[in-house]
Length: 403
Image (spheres, rainbow, N blue to C red):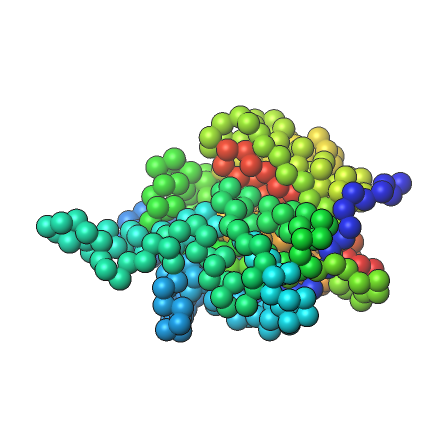
């Protein structure tokens, strides 16, 4: 029985993704279809950790124009590289021209923004005074809002803008924020997504929490031992859906947000908050659990996260709905993960492709899910994507194919 949806579906009129498995949609599609991982042994900066990372190729070759020099940092260079793929900048500029700059929002997620620039600046501080280099520009790099301000400059939007920083759920939650702004008539379109880049803070920080794997991460594997940190930029353009759509058009049909209110860094052991987010997303879309054809799991490959999420999914969906985690392909891209995996879900709907889980070898027998290790073709109508952050800030999105 189809329930009455609480939200009006929004058209995802353009989307793009850049990560270690590919720059732009064509390379990303090829990697997902092949079940290929982009993880490599850690060779980032001066990091001396025995771990694997998801590093975006050729990112060091990106140069910002002099006009944008104040925003020069790894995170904004990654944002620009992502924006330039798949005609996304042109689509955003068209939206600004059609609706007006003040009617287009820029809502993005990140966790550390350009903190790498601060790390480098502290190495170069004056040995006598401790002063940071004069060229260091906090507002344009370290500041969490930097990436949204930078993207506004690039696409010419002047509507509401903010950055959500709720760890791994950051760039999923901005889809829900944009839906509320459009529903209430504040805006007509929104550039949403996430950008998060490698830095020493996240690599050493997660290592200090004993959450970093020495091998490529293995989500939902019985021998999983932690995450592989990655970096990515993913963007989507959300607009009201017109009356007539092509059958392969992709819609945002539901979103759900919750808090575990349990612990600073550990998920609720029974996945209570995750289940609440999934239930809200289904209700928003007017769907029941049985309507979902595929679940993109958060699946970080830490023992506690996968166990808690697996329990929540099993209780709500049973053990027959196909599910997988793509973290073994890209690593955990932290604040960009929700946006990146929303784009993966859009690709899955458009291409009829169920992604696999690179790196996973022997499923944890304690988690009873229909876990997909290898990708396979499958007709998909509705999919759900989970993003579960530190402190239990959770977000689930439902994406649907128009026909």
